[in-house]
Length: 78
Image (tube, rainbow, N blue to C red; front, side, top):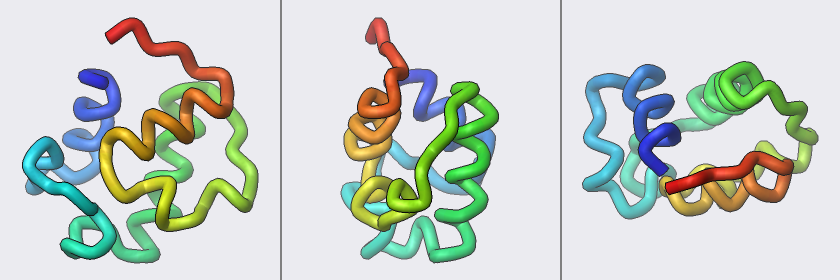
């Protein structure tokens, strides 16, 4: 999950993502951030996400982002 944390920190360096339980309810991500981060994930992991992947529950925390990426074939070693 270190790579996901690194991508998050590059996207929004002002947040301590490891300390946030729910990026949506705690205000770390808003709807514009979700759309932008969706594009970051596509570029960073060289994948194509579906429109249905833009649901807030896919971006609530590091684990949900990892689950989304794994569902699109991304493999993690950590």
